Length: 95
Image 1 (cartoon, rainbow, N blue to C red):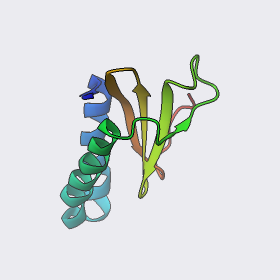
Image 2: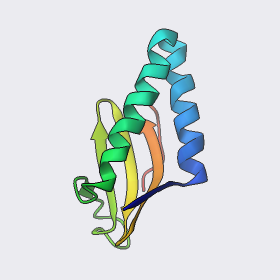
Image 3: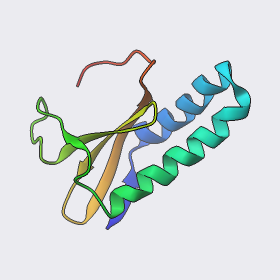
Image 4: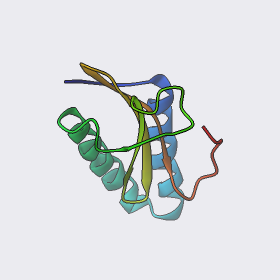
């Protein structure tokens, strides 16, 4: 299965690393690397996250928590698309 990141997800990952670096710079790169490793697991287990009931198609739009990070993604037949990434302490807009 192919894994792709939306432009928003890439921006989110950079913002998340910077957000963590404000509190603990030595941890920021490690957390970002660990997060990417966990996201890679979605290739093998695309349905592991919980469905987002408010989404137009909850079976496709899913959310997974990795440590203190939340990853929203779309699990299609042959592609997993990472849509957004945030730290649970960050303020974010609802779906």
